[in-house]
Image (cartoon, rainbow, N blue to C red; front, side):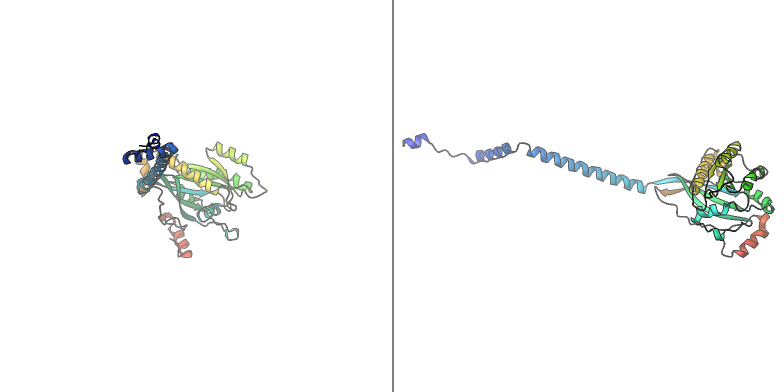
Length: 294
């Protein structure tokens, strides 16, 4: 053996050792590579799990049936002629205002409207618009009976309509209206620049007679939604506090619908409906003039 061979002996590494050495060398180059990959994979997996859980929860909620309680409430508008009772109702029910076509109400008109008080409670409002003329007062008394809420309306630009409020309160008292009936004072025509009744006077009168007060404008739509929302919410709370047997007198009912599902009963269309026996003759006249009426 030559000296060269002794000084530089050539050794061959076994195949298994060579492979292990190669793996160890690669690991030593990037020691954090596997750790980072594992962390990224775990983060992606967690995000996917969160998305799947949220989707399952949404699907579960959409399929879940809940009890929606609907209270049928009777609301009556009273006040002098031409204070804007019909205009307020039309603005709320149809979102329309046509000053040129507004005429004094003859007899009584009737409208339907639903209002969602909270996710589990609705009120089905039966809205009665009464005539303000003196000759119809006796008929108005009949419609006040059994009402859950009364809107007492006056014209902010006409003091005479405000001065008549006491006589309208007397009508309420003589109509055997239940003590739980919610009364609300409404000052219409807030859009008028020249007012004969200031809001402080109206608020004081309302407080003295245990009423809520709100200034509104049927023309501009100011506070129209709010007055019905306040009334509907208050009436629903009053009914909920009644004993169960008295609650049924307000025609409360329950319906099972999916959460978030709308009630699509088609009874929100405004219409005229005069059907009480004591007013049968006027009913015939009204229906004759409006053959398409419900």
